[in-house]
Image (cartoon, rainbow, N blue to C red; front, side):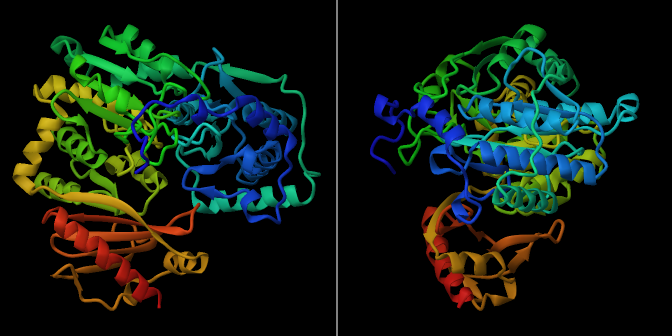
Length: 541
């Protein structure tokens, strides 16, 4: 923990925006240097122009690759494009538009030149493709330009195909490989033109208007719930005002500032500026106002993550809120399929497993990455999909799809609905779950690993684990593939009756991540964490 974690940023913490943008245009990536290659993680390509990891050359190549990919897939409809408030997002959108127009792609940008949250872009793609008349013009897809909650110096670029959610590994691998080929060839295969032929789309108006089909605003209004919303300087800033006005809510946008340096933030756990609404340090200034509202919320820069603050509990752990949201939704959404499953990633809390069992609902456990929930959300077989990193989405009242990407705005509004309908705060409802199911201790830590060890961990089979016990309990599962869909988890999960750990290699650092949880308290959790490293090291040989 950094000594200044949770304290306001000072001038020395802030980026030089001009230098960052200048580096975007001046630095040329070298595809032979690993750190300068295009690499798609679970949420697109990310990096800083100062490290020659997110520069004009990258965006030219990625966008050309996307044009070629969509042509190969027969995607002939419009491409929706939007960006967040990071300093590199606007230059990247300008670059991308040059390439898209030159390749004859029909492009739709925001009607009001506003920022576009990730859920609004996913909503736009699905709205188009679910309309028979529009779909007849060709399926739509999209690009959202955001590094999510990453620090101010970073940029991010993500492709969402016609299903509206994050592209799968097959698509991103093809796009990344083709982009790196183009960079290596000096960008000779990239088409560019002035972006004159672009159309507009009202992302905000259409998204806000449609929220009435998924959130009970009448209940929120009747109960007089006082809502505070902090966009944390991100893309949702004008969305919250529009929601307030459209649904006549007692809602205050507590911070309307947009600053690409994020000078108003408090520092995260490592002393960096990071717009993570699930971090108590990053949210310190928001949490300080908890007593002013019935529900106080935060979103990251592209509004795909949520932070929930209550007067009686402060900032909720994301796992805790997911458990509360699941129990509430499956008891208050009569239009959902009776066999609709509860979706969770395998590193999310086992409290969700116990809630699912109590509800008599099937638990669908998948690897890390929201893309795994896409098919189930589209056909209604998954009512709710959530990740431990404070990202989730769920179905409309009638059981049809809302978004196939994470929607932080939606989950914040749900907290207000829960407070209005139940008369209790989400924190109190989680305390009720603890009384019924136990009190889990959960933590994520990092352990050192060489690049070779990280590669080996990513390919590890559960049978490689020779241990039979974990922290004094018999091991009941050794998983290298997710129970829900059989997909490889890119790591390992080991479970007992009361505890589990999962180990996954980091995509950016020489460490692997250890997620661990115990229903037998913090001391047992520490024992699980210590033995997890030994078990992983032994399995890697």
